[in-house]
Image (cartoon, rainbow, N blue to C red; front, side, top):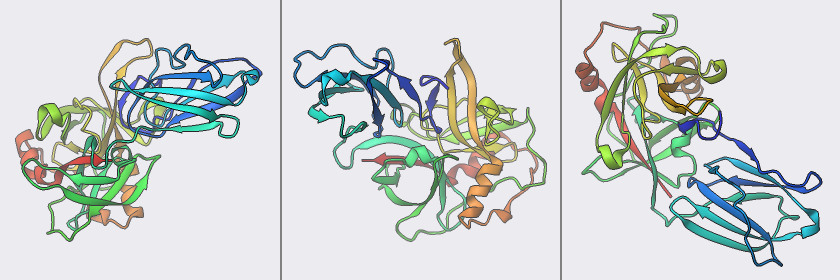
Length: 322
């Protein structure tokens, strides 16, 4: 996918070739932080002018990389100016790019600063919570953050960046929690066209509490026929990441991971959303010794309010703190 196609989630390590002299030294800049970089200026340390923005019209999002070829005649010492989203500027003077051709970039926030939000859901009665890897990636602390209650700290006990899944647990002993069950393997295979419900905590700064949407399974594969993903039409927004995709009986058949916002010809895409496939999720949970054998086949259809009532307490809003 092009860098601007995925609005949230997923394994979106991307590359922008910044050009330069063919014989130049290749320098790579990787945004290892969570704040997008909107401008990058480079100039030899002996110069006084920053010159052009090396990103141009691009933005260097989290985990994205920019490769540049710099003229060897300009020497090894360079000054770097970084402008992050929100017009936050940082300057690094006299960097030896010959010694460190791979530059790790990130914007540090104050400890305890809210970096991002997401959704998770309990998958056992022992406090295990499933979410996306990208929801917890780079977080110093992860909390369950229900309105009006103290944050509940969580620990990451297993993660898989490629599958984009992470398993968390309560740092302190907790009472048995309601949990969501997955559809059983070999029973009522998922079919394109069947109804799905997505419950989560999108855009909490604006929408506040839990949000529920409906749609259908539109494909059993993701981008480029990726069998580890499924596609569905229930509207999803940033913050839905890590939440469950439920069938008409309230049983989970996937995990929300990403949505596409533009097509290849830069037209707006509508209701093209992706989830982690059921097989990928259950394999991850089995590897973590979570008892997925207690799965259920698709049961009798429930109304949307009934699905929310049954599953709502098992689904939690997550805060990522620096």
